[in-house]
Length: 364
Image 1: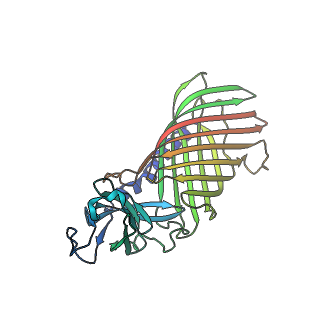
Image 2: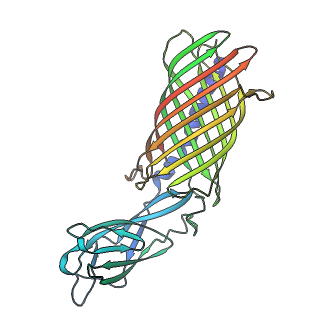
Image 3: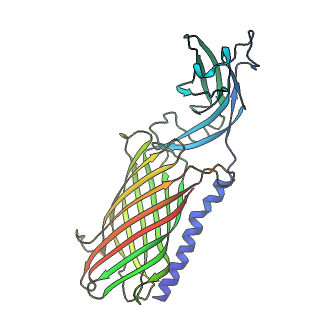
């Protein structure tokens, strides 16, 4: 048992190193930029120069996001709107299909989606008496094709972005064996997960690993530690549109107890699983998501029974991604996970295992 315990500790470290390795790659990526260009160099508005728009800068930072399983890029433009009469609040300003709302001083800003290497943007200024002034501009993003964006942004999956989530939390564990008694304890848990879309399809490959790191407190002399591994294949359903995303995963599940005092626990349970997820992306790229999981489990090659299963549910909220250079694109989040395992064996009797976990996570 001690040898198994030491080997599992080593596996923790290996998993951490393996899943954290790509973080250095993402941190080292250069910042993406695009250029705002106009047909001619516009100066201050005048009778000879009817331009109503003055932009703050022509070099624009490119923001990346995943919407409905597709990679999309946006830039934020900002400047000053100076209509005739210097009364911007009585004018309407439209950039492409986006309505911009200038302030009393004419200042405006707005995010524009990029559709190719060159994204044409038509600015329409509509006055209170129906007068319309059109100005044309373009946004040049030379890295558009290199970043793996497909032309149909609404339906294809991101084929190049591997997402990794690392979390740490506190879990309340309640374990009962009818043949021996029960355990109640609080433990520190680690959770690592990855999800990678397959090329430019709706399919993706995912998995996660979780384990007890240490026992914080316990109400009985006995204690137990738990480990679990999930491997899944997911499909993004097409009938939910942005900002919603619904994926259905299917795969295999493995769990076992180890370490602790060694007098309680089960060994090497496996089984298939179904794992649907639903998420909502806010305009600032924050993400609220939830999942359900059902997995009938068995030890060895025995037939699966309905009373031997694990059910889980979870919620998470990841805040707007960081914009700093080192953590650019990384999101911090809060998580809540709840699971219930039921098992009947000749040796242990009826086993129930409930975990309630709350934690913090980083999504890379």
